[in-house]
Length: 140
Image 1 (cartoon, rainbow, N blue to C red):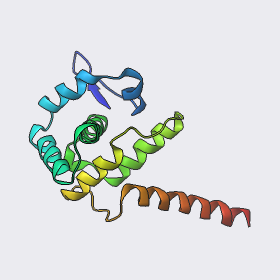
Image 2 (cartoon, one colour; image 1 turned 90 degrees about the vertical axis):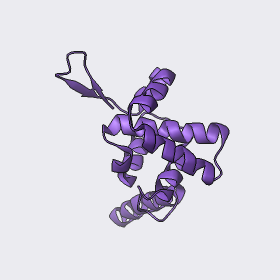
Image 3 (tube, one colour; image 1 turned 45 degrees about the vertical axis):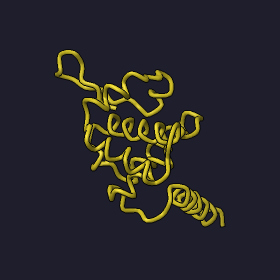
Image 4 (cartoon, rainbow, N blue to C red; image 1 turned 180 degrees about the vertical axis):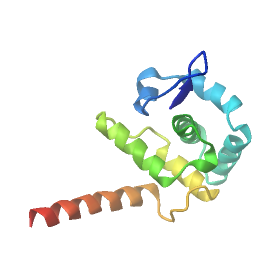
Protein backbone atom coordinates (compact mmCIF):
# COMPACT_ATOMS: atom_id res chain seq x y z
CA UNK A 1 0.00 0.00 0.00
CA UNK A 2 1.37 3.39 -0.86
CA UNK A 3 1.06 6.13 1.72
CA UNK A 4 2.73 9.45 1.18
CA UNK A 5 4.39 10.80 4.27
CA UNK A 6 3.50 14.23 5.59
CA UNK A 7 6.32 15.90 3.66
CA UNK A 8 5.29 14.07 0.46
CA UNK A 9 8.92 13.30 -0.38
CA UNK A 10 8.92 9.64 0.65
CA UNK A 11 6.51 6.75 0.44
CA UNK A 12 6.29 3.35 2.06
CA UNK A 13 4.66 0.19 0.78
CA UNK A 14 3.13 -2.16 3.30
CA UNK A 15 1.54 -5.54 2.75
CA UNK A 16 -2.11 -6.46 2.50
CA UNK A 17 -2.01 -7.87 6.02
CA UNK A 18 -1.66 -4.29 7.28
CA UNK A 19 -5.38 -3.93 6.62
CA UNK A 20 -6.17 -6.93 8.81
CA UNK A 21 -3.98 -5.87 11.69
CA UNK A 22 -4.83 -2.18 11.59
CA UNK A 23 -8.53 -2.54 10.65
CA UNK A 24 -8.74 0.91 9.11
CA UNK A 25 -12.49 1.15 8.53
CA UNK A 26 -12.39 4.90 8.11
CA UNK A 27 -9.64 4.63 5.50
CA UNK A 28 -11.98 2.69 3.19
CA UNK A 29 -14.64 5.37 3.35
CA UNK A 30 -12.15 8.21 2.90
CA UNK A 31 -10.30 6.42 0.10
CA UNK A 32 -13.54 5.69 -1.67
CA UNK A 33 -14.39 9.40 -1.60
CA UNK A 34 -10.91 10.53 -2.64
CA UNK A 35 -9.73 7.81 -5.00
CA UNK A 36 -11.63 6.89 -8.11
CA UNK A 37 -15.13 7.58 -6.85
CA UNK A 38 -16.73 6.91 -10.22
CA UNK A 39 -14.87 3.64 -10.76
CA UNK A 40 -15.76 2.38 -7.28
CA UNK A 41 -19.39 3.40 -7.81
CA UNK A 42 -19.36 1.48 -11.10
CA UNK A 43 -17.99 -1.57 -9.28
CA UNK A 44 -20.73 -1.30 -6.68
CA UNK A 45 -23.44 -1.05 -9.36
CA UNK A 46 -21.98 -4.07 -11.15
CA UNK A 47 -21.85 -6.00 -7.88
CA UNK A 48 -25.56 -5.37 -7.37
CA UNK A 49 -26.24 -6.45 -10.95
CA UNK A 50 -24.35 -9.67 -10.21
CA UNK A 51 -26.54 -10.25 -7.15
CA UNK A 52 -24.15 -9.20 -4.38
CA UNK A 53 -25.81 -7.33 -1.53
CA UNK A 54 -25.13 -6.44 2.08
CA UNK A 55 -21.86 -7.68 3.56
CA UNK A 56 -20.88 -9.56 0.41
CA UNK A 57 -21.01 -6.38 -1.66
CA UNK A 58 -19.45 -4.23 1.06
CA UNK A 59 -16.57 -6.69 1.50
CA UNK A 60 -16.01 -6.85 -2.27
CA UNK A 61 -15.81 -3.06 -2.52
CA UNK A 62 -13.47 -2.91 0.47
CA UNK A 63 -11.26 -5.50 -1.24
CA UNK A 64 -11.13 -3.44 -4.43
CA UNK A 65 -10.33 -0.26 -2.48
CA UNK A 66 -7.67 -2.16 -0.50
CA UNK A 67 -6.08 -3.36 -3.73
CA UNK A 68 -6.11 0.11 -5.28
CA UNK A 69 -4.48 1.54 -2.15
CA UNK A 70 -1.92 -1.26 -2.07
CA UNK A 71 -0.92 -1.03 -5.73
CA UNK A 72 -1.01 2.74 -5.89
CA UNK A 73 -2.81 2.51 -9.22
CA UNK A 74 -6.37 2.75 -10.39
CA UNK A 75 -9.19 0.24 -10.55
CA UNK A 76 -8.48 -0.28 -14.25
CA UNK A 77 -4.84 -1.10 -13.44
CA UNK A 78 -5.74 -4.11 -11.28
CA UNK A 79 -4.78 -7.49 -12.71
CA UNK A 80 -5.20 -11.13 -11.86
CA UNK A 81 -1.64 -11.14 -10.52
CA UNK A 82 -2.65 -8.57 -7.91
CA UNK A 83 -5.17 -11.05 -6.52
CA UNK A 84 -2.56 -13.80 -6.48
CA UNK A 85 -0.10 -11.46 -4.74
CA UNK A 86 -2.74 -10.57 -2.17
CA UNK A 87 -3.45 -14.26 -1.60
CA UNK A 88 0.26 -15.03 -1.19
CA UNK A 89 0.68 -12.13 1.25
CA UNK A 90 -2.14 -13.42 3.43
CA UNK A 91 -0.90 -17.00 3.24
CA UNK A 92 2.62 -15.98 4.30
CA UNK A 93 1.12 -14.49 7.43
CA UNK A 94 -0.98 -17.61 8.08
CA UNK A 95 -4.29 -15.93 7.27
CA UNK A 96 -7.14 -16.63 4.88
CA UNK A 97 -8.14 -14.22 2.15
CA UNK A 98 -10.53 -11.57 3.41
CA UNK A 99 -14.23 -11.89 2.72
CA UNK A 100 -15.19 -10.33 -0.56
CA UNK A 101 -12.14 -11.40 -2.55
CA UNK A 102 -14.04 -13.74 -4.85
CA UNK A 103 -16.83 -11.22 -5.32
CA UNK A 104 -14.27 -8.48 -6.10
CA UNK A 105 -12.74 -10.77 -8.75
CA UNK A 106 -16.17 -11.38 -10.30
CA UNK A 107 -17.01 -7.66 -10.32
CA UNK A 108 -13.72 -6.70 -11.96
CA UNK A 109 -14.03 -9.55 -14.43
CA UNK A 110 -17.57 -8.52 -15.29
CA UNK A 111 -16.65 -4.88 -16.04
CA UNK A 112 -13.69 -5.99 -18.18
CA UNK A 113 -10.83 -5.02 -15.88
CA UNK A 114 -9.73 -8.64 -15.46
CA UNK A 115 -9.34 -10.68 -18.61
CA UNK A 116 -9.29 -14.14 -17.01
CA UNK A 117 -12.38 -16.08 -18.03
CA UNK A 118 -12.26 -18.42 -15.04
CA UNK A 119 -13.54 -17.82 -11.53
CA UNK A 120 -11.10 -16.89 -8.77
CA UNK A 121 -11.44 -20.37 -7.23
CA UNK A 122 -10.67 -22.04 -10.56
CA UNK A 123 -7.53 -19.92 -10.99
CA UNK A 124 -6.39 -20.68 -7.44
CA UNK A 125 -7.06 -24.38 -7.94
CA UNK A 126 -5.12 -24.25 -11.21
CA UNK A 127 -2.19 -22.55 -9.51
CA UNK A 128 -2.22 -25.16 -6.75
CA UNK A 129 -2.28 -27.97 -9.33
CA UNK A 130 0.67 -26.39 -11.16
CA UNK A 131 2.69 -26.21 -7.94
CA UNK A 132 1.88 -29.85 -7.14
CA UNK A 133 2.85 -30.90 -10.68
CA UNK A 134 6.20 -29.10 -10.40
CA UNK A 135 6.81 -30.69 -7.01
CA UNK A 136 5.83 -34.14 -8.28
CA UNK A 137 8.12 -33.94 -11.35
CA UNK A 138 11.05 -32.87 -9.17
CA UNK A 139 10.45 -35.80 -6.81
CA UNK A 140 10.24 -38.36 -9.64
